[in-house]
Length: 310
Image (tube, rainbow, N blue to C red; front, side, top):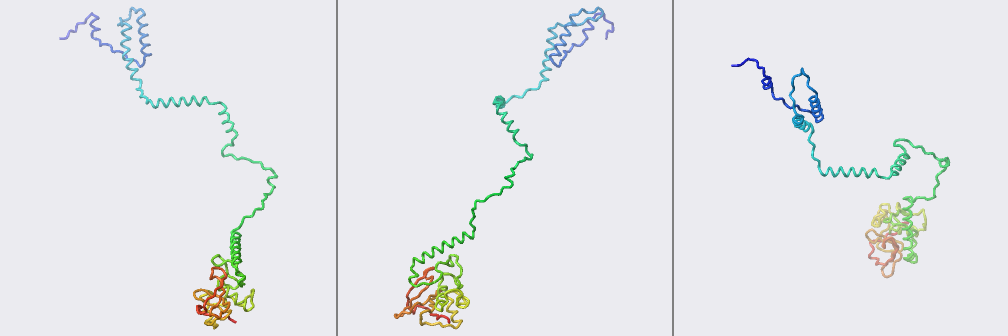
């Protein structure tokens, strides 16, 4: 059974009360303020009409508040990450560098500022004043003239002609009786052109055509016999006999002075003389390349003798 009889003892009332839980504070400061407030309240005399309060010794209250306070503060502080020793060293180096830069001489900064002040801003136009004399004055040339490609080619040809003429004079051809007018001209292989007889300079055919004209009294242009009427069907040495036959001229095995000796292949010569021993003396060009020469050979070794046209 339950006893509903009221009790006059105050101890029974306090026995049923729950054990007071310790108060938690967010910081040490708040805990100290609460502790100070409780201490000052305890020091004041209790009012007669106030209910008796449960007193606690300051040490007990401080002990009860310290643990939650510490726990709350520790919980509110985030865990600090561990620092890498290398990052610490790098930070120290950067800080040292900052101190070094701060210690540079002041004039370096002043020179940089003055240089930047003197420089024209990027993107801005600059004006230049030109003296009137510079505007009206004319540029002068030093008289130097560049050599053109044509002049270089001409100089090269002149050098080749000079070398050919020197070689010709040294050969003794003039003393032997050569009267060919163009012994110094460039050959076809050297880039030379056609003579006034329309054959290539210093070829066998040009020399023989010259001798035919000379024997008939033509020493200069206009010549009587040129390529167009002397060998119109082909000007090479190997084509001369065919031209003689096609034009009805005399082709014989009997040599005569002044005849054209076709020696075979692509070569012709001029018969200088017919000798009693059955040989012929020939004058020719290009038997020795590009040069005048003479030789005596049996008449029987000549393919044919082409008598000069009239």
